[in-house]
Image (cartoon, rainbow, N blue to C red):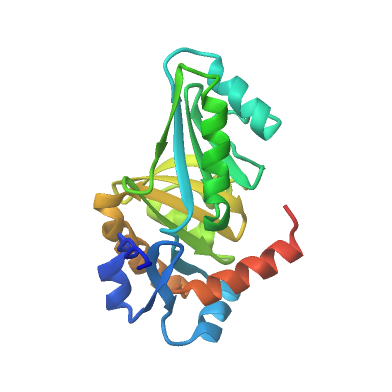
Length: 233
């Protein structure tokens, strides 16, 4: 049976311009590396790496009347974070933007399980609905000790205001972005797919003085693994 063609990355042109070696990963085309996985990992350890996260799961939950969404999230995640904060539970990040709107983010390998869990719970919450954001919202990540410095520069905010386990709406040089700051060295940004390359270019340009480099899957996975061993979540 022929495998379905992978989805093109919303950052495809920017990745090609940076010299990416492209591969199919979890249903998406993305960068394996940019010629030096070891060098890319070193950048993540000392400065900041910029990487495509198109393959991660991203869902939005909404409800028409109050109460059911909070009950659903509380039952699944064990607690209901307040808007602006985020909680990691059941292999997913639960990120409320308001009382009736929440973003759920997860790794590619748990995407199907998280979607199935949400669909099962939504069956008992008729006023709530779920949207898969894969086509509408592009995802990228920033990795390394200069992550919050870079985000602060492009958004015009103090890096210290970007707290760990926060989910914040920002304007990155006029581009609306929502950012999950998982740790001091790891953040995920969501942007409308139509402005994905624009945001990538903004971050790449602003990050160069900080030592930023584009990084691929190899460096991303190695850095993520080391970070999670060093700082269990």
